[in-house]
Amino acid sequence: MTFRHCVAVDLGASSGRVMLACYATQQRTLTLREVHRFANNLQKNNGYDCWDIDTLEDEIRLGLEKACAQGVTIDSIGIDTWGVDYVLIDKQGKRVGLPVSYRDHRTDGIMATALEQPGKADIYRRSGIQFLPFNTLYQLRALAQQQPDIVAAAAHALLIPDYFSFRLTGNLNWEYTNATTTQLVNIDSDNWDTTLLDWAGVPASWFGTPTHPGNIIGHWQSPQGKAIPVVAVASHDTASAVIASPLKDASAAYLSSGTWSLMGFESTTPYTSSDALAANITNEGGAEGRYRVLKNIMGLWLLQRVLKERDITDLPALIAGARALPSCRFVINPNDERFINPQNMGEEIQTACRESNQPVPQSDTELARCIFDSLALLYADILGELAALRGQPFTRLHIVGGGSQNQLLNQLCADACGLPVVAGPIEASTLGNIGVQLMTLNELSSVDTFRDVVSTSYALTTFTPNPDNEIARNVVRFQQKRQTKELCA
Image (tube, rainbow, N blue to C red; front, side, top):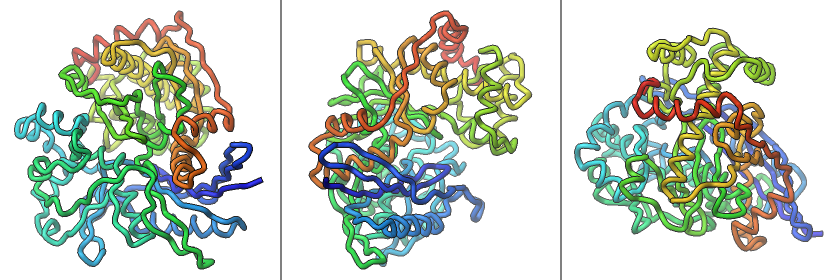
């Protein structure tokens, strides 16, 4: 029997891991083994919220060394991360400035000026990307206005996974799926939009032509002296997660659930109508020329912050306690900008409930229940927007990623959306990363073929909707309040 061994470096906004995959070519089965896991925390640097980029690189290299010590031949390496953030380098390849996080407040107010000039409709016509205050477009504008000396010193801007690939190989690359998250790629040309770059105040020479997933960027020299190919996978973690979503047909939607929740569907054409603009729908790049027509949802970031602030370590017990509480006593809009990076998430949730004349969640379980109910209701609201946009309903929703382990939230989602929810696989972004590597190694022919491998290799759990559940009766009320901004915007 022949095996292929691929390493996936999968970085999220709160943690990272290095995973070793073994693909049995005759049986067409795939297994994963975690070889290294590490935290990813923001740190204050000169007043900015920054990524500890050097420590992350050290952890990646340590994980790769551990993978090479497993006694197998490593065939390739791929890196995926969160989107929009970047690192600047000079002509010698040395880092310039700070690796500032999208959660930093330096972009406050920048997007509002963009909506006036060059204008919301023009930006959307060019990019097809939803308006989020931390998009790279606004980060670069803030940089050019606040730190022009750094702009003058830089030669290239590399998104986070491209930067780490550069550090491993010495070669520059701009991977397409992640590049589209910047709101700087023209949706018609699949290349950088010079009008938007000009508005941002940075030179087009910072960027090379985006490359679609599947090319070999270069090689990393292992401690054993082997040159291992580094593959440009679908380097935006959501793009990788969608590749691993076991979608069987066009009637299925997906929800990549983690720090962020990304809900959408696949399409061979983008949706850029006035209705799509009004709903703030994004058209991010995917593999094989497909678009990820989706919407960002703040996701389990709210829960992660509450867990940290209140020193909660027993998540199963918290979920069990939340399950025992009545539903929809406290409801917020998770997508309110106030929740992007508040000083204290629990207190911000309480303030939002107080301002909207609701009961105020006090206990840990009440805060958790508020988050779960609010997410489920928002999922239903956005799924309805997506169905209206494409002109036909969905028949099922696939939830992938770490959030798919939360059975309470899965059931609430099924009840609110009125659809069967299929949960799994958990390690979707890692699997999608591996899938592109296997296609690059000519072991698999397409995304659909890889999805068949995922379906046979990993158990999936179906949650059937209960229309009599209290949360299902609150969907319309939530939609009306969100539209009239009663739910804290």
